[in-house]
Length: 601
Image (spheres, one colour):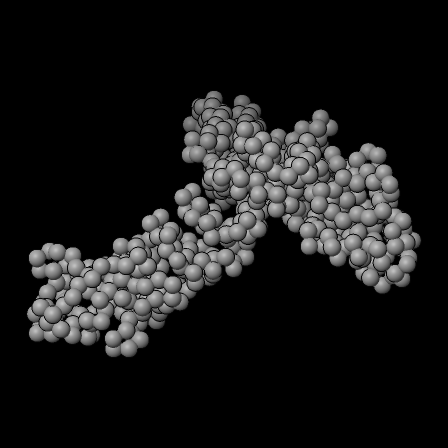
C-alpha cells in the first residue's frame, strides 16, 4: 500500500540510474470503480513540468520511482480530459462520503499495487492519521499510542463511496460515484446538502432528477429549503414544487420572497397552485397550516369493488391510503373505512355500510400542538381536518406530527436557554444570530445588575455580618431552581389538557407542600452548619428562617404565576420561562438580606 503524500517529491530515476526529476502529482483515469494511475507528473532538473505515461514505470516505492527507459528514449504526454490529478484535484478537497452521508476533507489518498506495473486509487484518507502522515508524525504518534495499548485506526473512504465537489470537475463523467449519490435515501442527501455551500449544492442538484430532488428537499430543514429554491432556476423550481406534497410545497413558498413565490406559482399547474394558495391562507401553527390536501376520500354510495378499483389508480400519488374517508355529495365527512375492512368486505357492499361513523377529527383552526396530542392520544396514522360545516379539507399525517413535536420541543429548549434557534441555519446571518442571542443576554444582564444593586444596598450589613455572605449563592440557586421546577410542573399540567380546576389546584398544593418540606430541610441544614461554624444562634436562626421563607415564596410564585398568565391567554413558555426564574434569584436575595437586616436591628 502507498499513500500519495509519501511519494510526492520523491526522485524519478531512469533506467541508467540518473535522477531526471521529482514527482509532483499522479494522474488517474475516471469512470472506473477503482481508477488506475495513468501518468506521472514530475518536475525535471530544469524545473520544467512533464507528464510521463505509466507504461514507463518499472517500480514505485516510498523512496523513489524507477523507469524502464533512459531519459533520451522517453516520450512525454499531456493530461487527457478524462483524467484527474490526485494532488491538484483531490488532496485537501471537500468530498461527499456517500456511505457515511457526510462531507469530509481529503487528508491523503491511498493507492494499491495491483501488479508490478499497475497502481490503482482505492480510497481517500479523511482522518487524523492522514494529517499526521503529511507532517511526518504518523510513526511517532502510533508508537506512543501502542505503549498505552491503543490502536490508531485509519479513516479510509473507498473511492466508490465518494462524490467529487470541485467546480472544475463538473464536466467529467464520473458515472459510478454519481450513481451512488443518486441512490442515497433522500434524508441522507438532505444531510449532505446542509454541509455544503451554495455552489456545491448546485453541483449536487445537477445529478438528481426532479423527483429525487423533491424528495431530498422535503427532508431538509425549512431554512435550507428556502435557500435551495432561491438558487434554482424558476422553471425547475416550479417543476419540483409540483411533485412535492402540497403541505411541504406551501411551507417552502411561504418562506420565499413574494416576487419569487408568485413567479413559481404562476409557472405551476392550475390545480397544484390552487392547492398551495389555499394552504397558505391558514395560520402557520394551526391544523390547516400543517395539513395536506392530498388525501383519499370517496362518496358514500360507492361499492367496495368500485372503491378498490379507484384506489389502484390513485395509490401511487396519495399521501396515505391506510384510512379511506367517506364523504357525502357536499364533501361533508361522514366516516372512515380502514384498508383492512375494505379488503375483507363483500365487493358489492356500499362503503357507507362498513364505515365507522364516530370519527376523530380536528378543526382547521386548532393549534398544531393539540393536533399532535390528538394523534398521539388515539394512536392514529392520520387525522382529518374539517371546517365549521364538517367539510373535509385535508389530513394531518403522523410524520407531520413528529415535525411539530420536534419543533415545539426545540422552541421550549431555545426559550429556556435564551436562544431562539439552537442551530444556525444556512439563511441566518451572523448579525441576526447576535441580535437573537443578545436580547436574552440583555435580560440576564439586567437581572445581574439588579442582584448587584441589592448587594450594594446591603453592603454595610455584609461588612458587619460577613457570615451572611456564606449563604448568598445557596439562596440565589435555590430560588431559581425551586421556581423553575414549579413552573415546569404547572406548565406541563396546563399543556397536557388536564388543567381542570380540581386537578390544577391539587398539583399546585402538592408542589407548594413539597416546597415547604424542602425549605424546612434547608433551614435545618443551615442551623447545623452555623453550629459547626460557631456562628451566633440568633444569626443562624435568622439565616434559616429567611432561607425557608424564600423557598416557600419561590415555590408558590412559580406554581401560581403560569395559572394567572394562562387566564389572560399569554404565551406561557415565553412569559414564565427564563425571565421569572432569573428574577426569582434576585427576589430571594432581597428577602434573605431584608430578614437578616431586621435581625441585626
